[in-house]
Image (cartoon, rainbow, N blue to C red; front, side, top):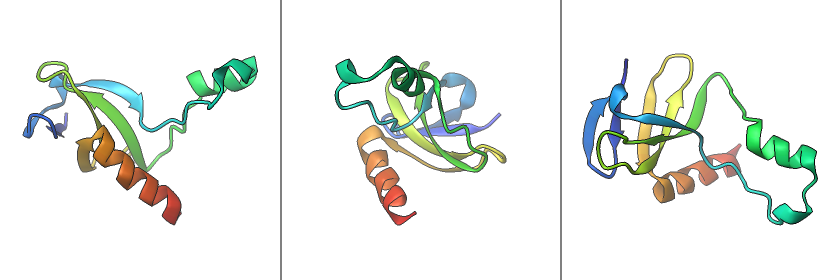
Amino acid sequence: MFQLHCPHCRELRDEEEFSYAGEAYIARPAAPDTVDDAAWGDYLFMRRNTRGWFWEQWMHSSGCRKVFAVKRHTGSYAIAGSWTLAEGKEKFLAEEAAS
């Protein structure tokens, strides 16, 4: 078990108070009506699922019920931090631009 910091409640709480909400910052197709079935299926179901640092969304289901971003190492469960979705997206985009 690990603990997550909710940036909305500003509290460090046990993992069991949260619900995993999937990979963070997946780009939605700009014109969904024009996307073929294969591309739409990739958007809905294909995820990076990398070993290492990974941006995730979590919801504080037993608290404020808000969704936020977490950067977590999938091998060691180490957590680099947690942010509101807007704050996390700035960091995510900066990392993507640097790599």
